[in-house]
Image (cartoon, rainbow, N blue to C red):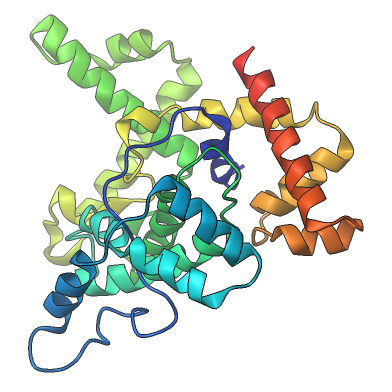
Length: 301
């Protein structure tokens, strides 16, 4: 279930607004620490990437095709043109347990994964697709550092909705809403309300046992904390996507599962899928496009 969000950007007709560009390749821009000595390395890195122009949609699409054909220069150019996106995303995790430079370096690895899996024929900008992978890479590094409260994504979504409802009811009622009022506002069952209580208890317990026993709230990172408020319905989207996916033909399902790594593996390239299924790369691309259109249509009914 946690791999389905990789697919979600391709199932909406609305592209996320571009916040900037992203990051580096396995060459000299792989690490923000690899810049020349003489001044603060990270400041030098930021200064250098700020001068790299962004890509137009058509240029991005052209690079995507060249990357699919195995062109390393195109891969490098796509990464360079998107360097700032990683920095922008990493800033959201400031104070969570790792230095900004380290988070940018980890995010850069996520960017490289996104470059390998991006399909330029889909109606999605690269930054929209890459954001998922960059966030995943940074959160994984933070998790390994021991500064993450581990909660399932569905729990994170529920807790975030709960907090949003608390704010809405506070503004409406002019006071703090009771737990029962919030649960009613969200239409939660007794079981779901108990889940919220357990989730809040887990966070409070982690905070109470933090370094010095007084760890500030923004120094903790719950595994779901980076989910934007306008994407809090991701669990519902995942459920609907799984149901719609089950209605597609076997070949379409196989292609989407391989292409987006829905079984937990790495997303496969069009060429590798073609070899497995005995199809040309372009035929796989066409079938993928048709399957996504079919899936999108079922979700919009």
